[in-house]
Image 1: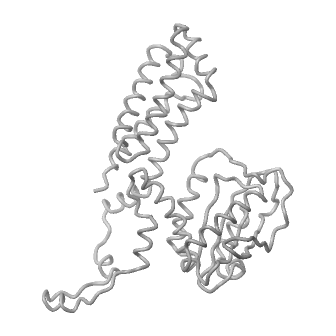
Image 2: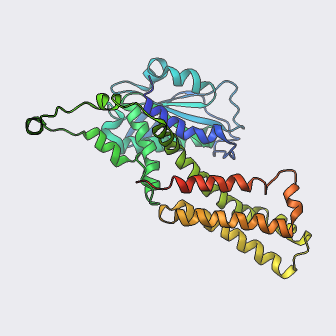
Image 3: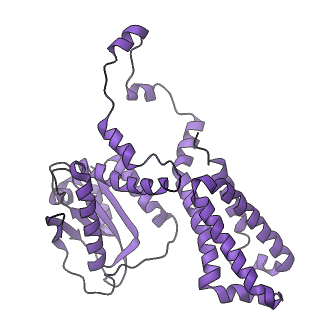
Length: 340
């Protein structure tokens, strides 16, 4: 069965896909004649490695598909995972995505993480080259040793965000410490204190979760999605106005009789400001300043539009009306920013 922690990685990798529309990013294999599915081999890490590819019903090489990887358990194989060990993955995911079952280089995925990670990268690149994949919808799952490897790949993202100053609990160092464990003899301490240590199950089970615990747990999982969404919101809005829809952005100002000499500078400055706010929010050290700047900028846009371009408040798509909820989301991010 797929372990709960691996399922959590699966949810976090795929939640943005199913929760909100995302731009499709076709892989190099789109539009090409795909090779036959089934048993495949690749030369990686000094040898010929084996993996299986399963295509969903009605696979179209011109339409980008989600891509899922399932990793087998210790001393098992990719065939075991497909046929017996990973029934949930095979029965659900494989019906709506390109599914890949890889055989680890060693007996277990976690016994040689470095080589298996490089091997995974090679297979990922090959599959994206051979088949039509939506590169924005790639996820992993596993069982036993494979679940540890799926967690390891997920922790690579935690390693990346740590470079931005965020203290993610899902990092490769944390997983290494969990595998290493904590050992010791508490006999002397027990004799001195008269206290018998409880197991984790006993400690957790002795205290019922209250509403504060539930709120914290739920918001803790939502926090990275909130921060990532706000970074994307600000960077994308500035980039679109500056690069993709520059003429349309300047056209709005011209249609409202702005001085021609100010149209281009206002468009450029506000676009760069938006992208700068997104960059500030991305880094932990400057996130609070970026959130406050984002709220001030949003209120400024709303007030300025009410005075200079009031008709934009009643346009069909309601772009300005949606600025209010964005401010509320920034307030939520600011309220949950502290780690301790």
